[in-house]
Image (tube, rainbow, N blue to C red):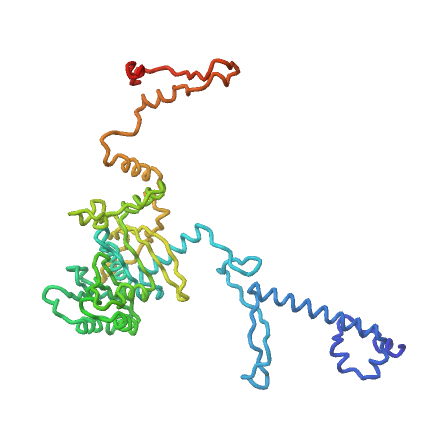
Length: 438
């Protein structure tokens, strides 16, 4: 023991790697140590290893470090295990909770995120939606929405190709491909060839098809052929499908073209009229069934309701699909695109950059979130199909407030007189003495 103490004199024992010391030390030196000393060293090392392992797991769970394969220095391709390296912190990363899960977004963060995604879809940015499906009907056509998408694309110097079966014309800067009138006899292969020539030689192109019902059902074009043609050139598709059209039934188990388009679309935008959305909200507050409009009313002679086709803008029920397949749903108010929304265009360009994004979530739209608007709709709904008014005048309201409710005098402590009801007749009360005697 004296020899061992002499050897350890002047050495900081706390800095000694006892595992390496016990592994490389001579057997005679280790034998000179008492058993309690070696056992204490091994217990202390085991506790330290357990604490390091626990701390390492907590760091990996919180995302501060990540595991990467540790390569053998002698061979760059052989892995000898995993090692933990520090992960650079992202200043824009969402805060995580105790278990490492991201905390839920606040309402303001959710609204900003939804508006950002919708803006990227309308502006055709960042490959957010290679195939956007727009659903409309006679109650709210997608004309204003499509015109806004075209204007945004032209402001960004994007080549716009318009394959039209319904729209007679568009902006002069758009490559217009008519498929009606004198061009109605063109086959589906000829139309695809014209689209391919129009998008050839350009970096970014936007192909708008109005409508997909005519292209898929009448011309017999395979939806996959159109999508592959556009994707091979790094372009985007915006297809309009009129929901009033009934798809032809060729085979009993054939899949409808609309279902195929919905399955392939990365974003689905359904156009609704603002008046119809407000009426549906008012009916929901009163626990009433949602009202129907236009042909859904099943009334003879009614094709389009008076409140349809709002020219101020369009309510869009959007469904965005991520790469993982998880959908996101949100309702937006998209007003008409005006020339004043864009800056002065440079020479040779039709539009300048967009000044400020004007798309907003429907919950932020004042006309939708204002309760007075819903009250007016409820009042108008109550007055329909009635020959009299249910509301009271100011004089009738004052008379109602001055009425003393009937009561039993037995409750005042003067029992024994029965249940006499006190009520003063008014001049407006309709009372017939003869009927009362009967």
